[in-house]
Image (cartoon, rainbow, N blue to C red; front, side, top):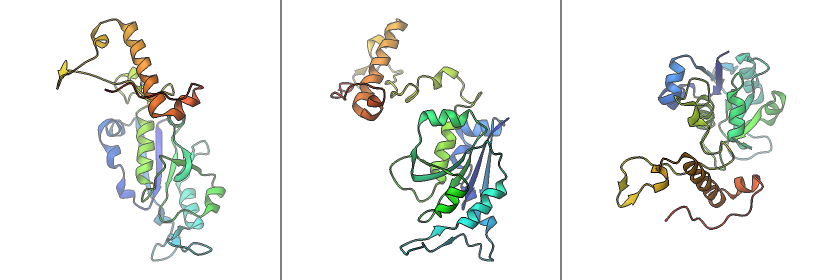
Length: 239
């Protein structure tokens, strides 16, 4: 079965956007995955195609109505085994392990919020899993949905040209990726670490592991501590 992303949005014209170029775009064109962007307004019931209303209890902004969004979700007619996601700054942070899980499945339905938020009742009634891509607020869920799709699509079979390239990236083992180098041999007086050109694969692997651990300890102590390691030292990976 082909991995499929179904996007519910007020701006379907935003898709495929960046997902239509590079690795994701080539994979989309070749049928390695499918993308469907559905307009939430298609489920509106009045001639103005209204989808929002004022917040119960007062306050600024507008809230996406439960009945309209529920109708849009139902109209998508997705299989019960497909995850139902809501891109939301209050959701659980998206992790590489969750991306791997999503990429291994049939593909999610993703709701892109707008306005001040979405009526809680439709979140509960339709079992939406709230997912965050960071501790910041975007204008809507579309860009976050693109980020999630891109992270998943690149893991699909046949998308990346070299299977090993996905196994040594940041977060693949709960660590940040080690520094990368290529030609020229010397750039503005800075050379490539000699060990990387030594031809000793065991030493190269050990160096990369040590660099990954050092970077993680300093830049992401939360990841380091999650691995049951010690508190972060000073950053010794950069001059």
